[in-house]
Amino acid sequence: MINEMNSFGHISNDYFLLAAILIVGMSYSILAKKLTVAAAIIGGILATVIFAVAGYPGIAMMSAFFLLASAASGWKLSFKQEFTNPQDKAARKSFQVLANTGLPVIAGLIIIIIPGLKELMLLAMAASFASATADILSSELGTVYGRRFLNIITFQPEKRGLEGVVSLEGILIGILGSCIIASIFSSGFGWNRNFFLIVIAGTAGNLLDSVLGATLERKGIINNNVVNFLNTLFAAIVAILISILF
Image 1 (cartoon, rainbow, N blue to C red):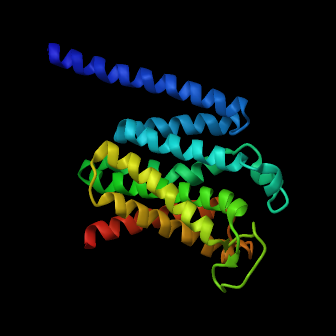
Image 2 (cartoon, rainbow, N blue to C red):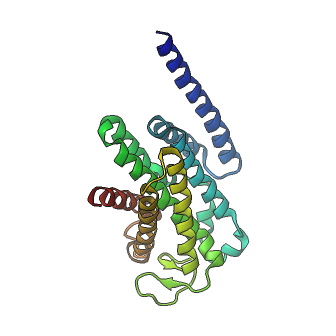
Image 3 (cartoon, rainbow, N blue to C red):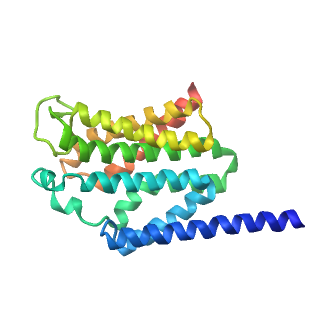
């Protein structure tokens, strides 16, 4: 009985700490105009689901994505305004939050429904965060530090900042972003081959993002939110397939 009470108290303390973290994070995001009020609330709800299945490593991955995304988006903003749509730098809205973190939450819900898939779904969660992080870093920082910009489909030079245009520097920065998420996952769940699976899957998702940007997004068939969700989905699928097949 005492053990059950101690366990309940430990869980309660964890969620109190989570609530404190979320309140601080949501308040900052709103005041700094990084997220709209609705987006911040949705982010808090999604974070609670992720914490329920992945604990502090899950929250750390989600926090790392948002912090890196915010820092990268604001870096050398005046320089990037020449090449990007000013609306892209506005406070992120609910659909943008869902596009980037929806897949990790879906993976979390699958864990709740089918606990036997927890190991695979945690890997999928990390891969999707790695892809989202790689995408935002390669896009925002690649625009600043890239030297040669090519269309990912034709490999012909194009203007920086256009959908589907990549640089070597941007791709490498994206890989670094995937490594950061993979390191957080490995610190929480163990250092093994999953580190490399997450980096590979995150990079694959980032490259698919560019391919979709150069094709379907440019033609107006899908928008950036759909592209962001699809790249995280692809990363999760790649990680699961590699884990199962190899």
